[in-house]
Amino acid sequence: MKTSISDVIQTENFISGQLPADERVLFEARLIVDSNLRVNTFYHRLVHRLVAFSHRKKIKRELENIHERLFQDPNKLHFKESVLKHFKS
Amino acid sequence: METLELSVHAPEPREQFFESIYETAFPAFARFAAKMNASFDDAKDVFQDAMVVYYEKSNDPKFLPRTTPEAYVLGIARHLWLKRFKRQRSSVSLEREDSEFAVPADFFPDERELSLLSFVAQSGQKCLDLLQKFYFEKTPLKEIAAFLGYRTEHSAAVQKYKCIGKLRDAIKANSIRYEDFHF
Image 1 (cartoon, rainbow over the protein chains, first blue to last red):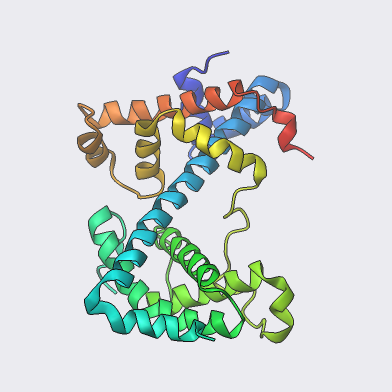
Image 2: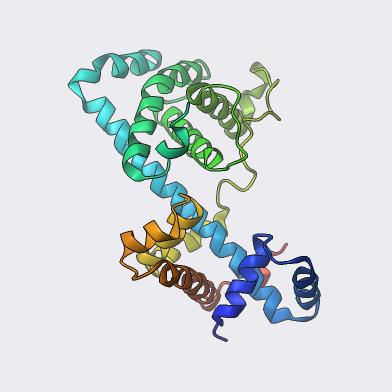
């Protein structure tokens, strides 16, 4: 079943703690009786987690580029040596 | 560090900020890691993860570090190292294991989440960009709209919800069973 945008908005507000108290209680009650809502809420949280992981990968790619640049820069030889000297046998 | 709040959000200043920390803190962590018999690649990997943790923490308005960014990253890196290489713990002080440098328990994906990551990337880079910018780079919707070519801030907001719904339905349809995530 396709997701309606109002359903997404409400779930988002519930997850982020932005639902007013009365609506939150109602949502929690629906979660108990409505298995479809329960599953959707589970996947909604999973989307957040997956977006977080993909963002971490993106930031790590940026860091890897910085790492490469610092290690290749002839003006940063001191930096390079100050790291590599610890790994020399 | 008064410019920190601004410096870590947009890509270009973020890069300068990262580079400055990297240059100062990585040699110090390399020294620690080498003493623990780490390989260069492991040291680099753990250090970069620590930078990511620091970046995420610094995006939290409640984050009030009591030390410099470099010292904070080193604290996280050391913590991560101890966590990852438990066998070596006996020779290292654990005094700060439960400290402010702790890494969130769900920082790394489990195997099932890992298998879904490439699927999420394939299901729409524009959506992923939008959601990453909104949730993890704390970019205002107005800027997101301009950057990703939405006509108004409202369009970007609606698109954000559509993207969540799209990804949610796509993951569900990708035959990942809800039960699989429950033990």
